[in-house]
Length: 266
Image (tube, rainbow, N blue to C red; front, side, top):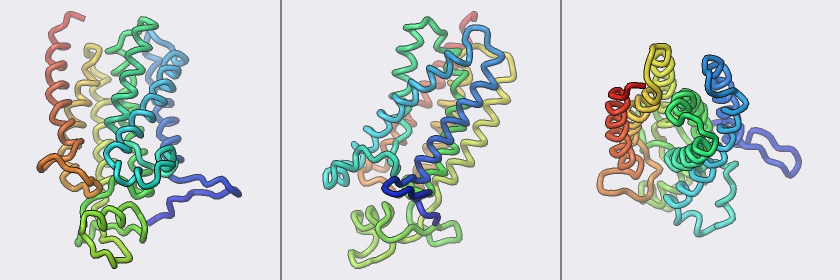
């Protein structure tokens, strides 16, 4: 695998994960800039301010969620909680944080929340696609042990190594983790497919909020099935991961609001 460290400048260490998060945000913002030109009710400056505020909410929410789902690891070294440059962000936590901030600001500035949701959704998907490459390099969000040609190898001491030891998948004397499925790469491919679908759907005449509903339904569905290959979870809820439980909530929500919005006059 690629070294998670992208660059060292004296005491400063720059990780590929951080580079990818920055690239994801910049790419998403550029896509907003291209698409906002067709909007009458909001400017790029206003949408970029919303995006930056949403990013802050997303990072805070995503980190809190990740730490809570891996609490046993962080209790051993609490200072690592703030080291987001090394990775460790849970998308659903970030989604909740971003949505909360953006809804608050939309109400404050009297923006159309459904229109903003549709404007931001393709950029969100593009950011997820790029961000998962960061996860792949960083070694988080990895898959279950894999013995076929799809397997990728992480180094000794990696998160895969630590969790496989903790779950008893490998012996305590094992110096290397088992090969795992590249679920991060699978997610990237699925996100890019979803992005194309959303952009094509957005070209057709539709009511505000439809694109975001499509996202909830399609993303929730494919994420649910990808989760069966994930191997980084320590805590399970019966046969399901916490992400799958959330998927089982957001897909019906997306479906419900899709039909409700289609019934609206505007």
